[in-house]
Image (cartoon, rainbow, N blue to C red; front, top):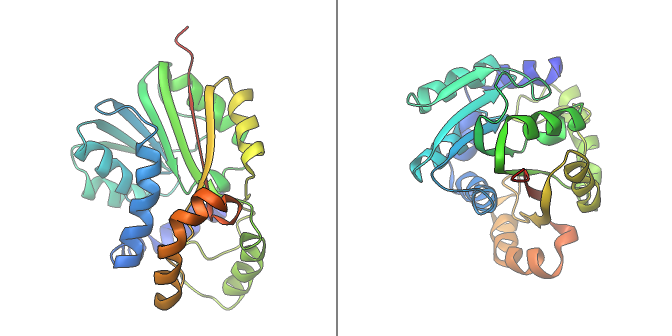
Length: 238
C-alpha cells in the first residue's frame, strides 16, 4: 500500500483534472449514480478511499452528511478543500478509526481493488455500520479487456508516465461471484452484484462516444464486458 500512497500523493494536485472534462464527469457521474442508488439518502456516510472528496460532495449535496478516509495525505488535503463542512482523515481500510455502529452508509469507489486485505476491510466496514446500514462498492472487474491493463500499466510505469492510476500496484480485478462471496463472508445480507461502465474515460473521444452509446446495452445484455463491478449489501438489523 506504500506504493499506492506514494503514487496518489504525487498526482493529488492533478487528480481532479481527470474528471474535469466531459469524459471524466460522465464516467465518474455514471459510477456515482450506481453507488448512490444502493445507499440510504440523508444518512451519515463513510467514503473509504475517498480521493479528493468527489463522492463525499455528491452525497452531501443530496442531503446527507459524510466523512472521507484515504491512504494519501495529499488526497485528504484536497478533500478538505473541496468539502470543508465534512470530516476527512488519513487511514487504511483494514483498521477504520471509528466506533462500532457509527455510520448509516458506507461507500468505496474505485479503491477496493488496491486493498491488500479485502476480507479485513469488509469486516471493518461491517463493524462501523449501524444495524440496517448499507454498503456499496464499485471497483475493477475481471473482463477480457481488463486482463491486459496490468501489462499496459507496467509499461507506463517503466517509462515514467505520471498519470492517475497508471502503475503496477498488484491491483485485483473481481468477478461477480468473488466479490459477492466476500460480502457474504463478512456478514452482509441482501447482497447484489452488477456491472457498469463500458465508456471508460481513458478511451479516445471517437471511441468513447461510441462506447457511451452502447453502454446501456452492454450493461444489460453483455455485462461481462463492463469495466467495473458494483456490489451492495446490508448489515442485518440485529
